[in-house]
Length: 86
Length: 213
Image (tube, rainbow over all chains, first blue to last red; front, side, top):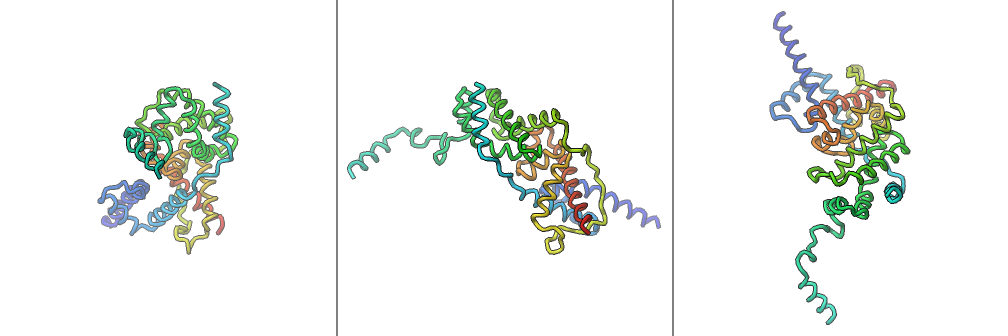
């Protein structure tokens, strides 16, 4: 009974820690030990597994948004105004 | 042939700094030299910097402000301000990083003047446990175009202080150091905001997927 409670507390501690470090993990900014800790918890926690997977796809999608096409002549307009204001 | 030989002879006698001009690479003047000339008051050099960076700055500000006219206005104001203060630019940072910081400040000023368009003022970090895993394309309800649209909407819906980290780091691909410098905050604070913003964007996709079920 007591062992079950301790295990649950440990799990929740790992859950909170992992959730807070998912971005650092995906950015490759964690130490080897911390990386292993994230991976181990994500392996046993369905919620963290799903959040990690969907966050990874979110970042990939954001990276593919790319620049929105600028209307023609943005630079020329700025240059024109610069010359007028001199 | 004689002419070519003569030209060749003259070229080999040119001083080294003329043959290997350090301010030119592949025919284009380097940015550092353009900045130096701008700092000396050379407007033509600054105009070249405008040509090189106007489209990218506009794209960042458009994503930040969500309105093409506002993005154009903020871009113009940013360049004018940059021209007036280019003397104080220190080449420890890249020119675009410095310019982007000015641009974001202009965008914030413009946003404050016109009242925030976004009604979102904070990020609620709540789990949506019922949402399915949409990370794998074969199981996803989202095709690529749909995901793009949802992400664009989610980024624009973020509060200002969370929108900038995502745009700078994840869309523009700047480093944490560069992006934190643009926002004028410490890297730890930047990373904390970025993480919360990413989770909020991810959650917005969760909610979109759930709506469609």
